[in-house]
Image (cartoon, rainbow, N blue to C red):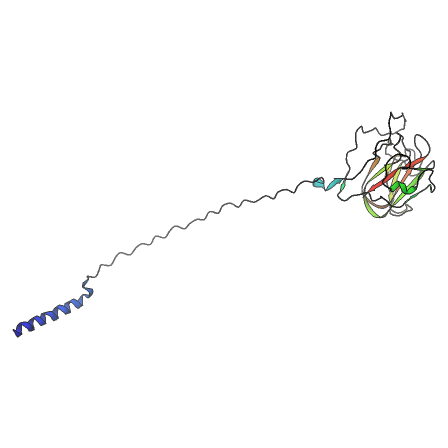
Length: 260
């Protein structure tokens, strides 16, 4: 009996030893083949084309691309009624037959002669006061014009500062369709017209005013006045000559406007 027990005990020990040689009782799994790692394709980023946003053009104004605007020119009412007489003046400008187109000048241009001092070669006008020539009253009614003596006379406007002058508008007397002779317009830096004198207009065809023979045309007076382009000339003083008209030997001025 004892022998049987001993034998069984020995067999159990052998079984335990054999089990320890293979832990967990699980056979070792064969090495699995290594996985081949396939690199994922790189994503190609396609950038959408950048759309340039065009700036909206600035709204157009009356100045347009040139920066010029019409000058503010309020015209008096027409006073002449009837058919103009045949004046037979040589070198006479033909009527335009319609309103004069607006005159363009840089923005901010205004009548710089308004209310400015004015002098005359005739210190005692027959009618009116010299100051009326720059008071902005362009009407041809009685009490709105100045009448100077006969023959060659001139008036001089002091702008009181140097100005870039773009236009000069003259109203002699538009109550009737008359033509004034020897109309000469000059600008200068000094009141005696010695320094930097420039002639902007001259229709003296025979040099009777002694300022040189002019090539500009005679013109008939209308309520629009005579507009002279000055092209930005820089000056302080403006002088205007005349030498009678087709009706008489007297000289008249209603208004002189200088746009600068």
